[in-house]
Image (cartoon, rainbow, N blue to C red; front, side):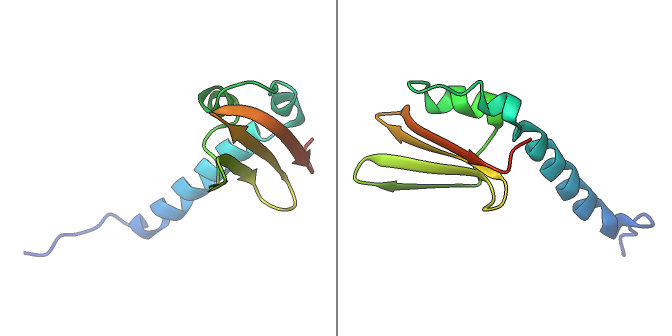
Length: 91
């Protein structure tokens, strides 16, 4: 038996990916960055700007990045709390 795919089934994944990226980029705004505060928990930050693209940990400091080098937010967490925030290219 062969399974038959609906026409244009191959385009679904790219469309879903683009939709997710657009949704993430809407959270990367100057307005949302202004909601971030020193002392907030990692979960509070995620509620405001979503899942990070990348997190690294060194010597107990967790550094997370949202967005990319041209437009994004960086946050450093110590003991699960924000100790440093920076942003670039936000509107």
